[in-house]
Length: 165
Image (cartoon, rainbow, N blue to C red; front, side, top):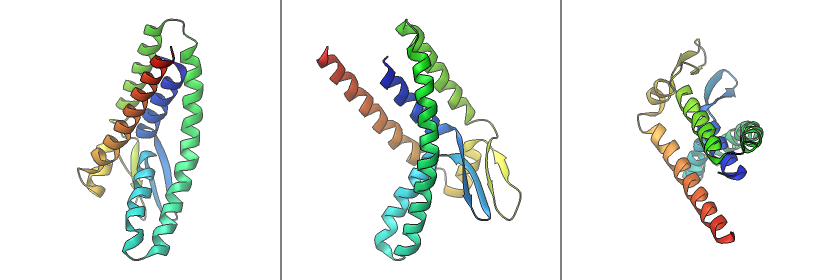
């Protein structure tokens, strides 16, 4: 596993698991940054159905949040990937990456996600916070496309690297 693959895997794992703060005047959410991307895409689908001004503001709002937290998570992924890539054994590198991803996946089961506005923030695991607001299909609709696109890109990169060797 090379540096670029490690960086990509860790960046996607951070994007899907680590809570990011979404602050909207009186409402605060602590959700993974992947949901900012989902909010932007949902907003883009509504651009042609009516209120363009409000929708464009929400797209920009989610975009700014995604840019800030995406940059932060990318920086963390770069630092972690440099540290992991310094290991000489490919098996050790792969083990460390798997352990980091499993640890981040376990993070979604802890009560560190939440949201609230006029009432106190309600904390819970990711599924308990997302499903009541957006329905049981929300997590698969956000996670499956991101994981699938990332997997395709990693496979294409691996095949390209094989051809280069």
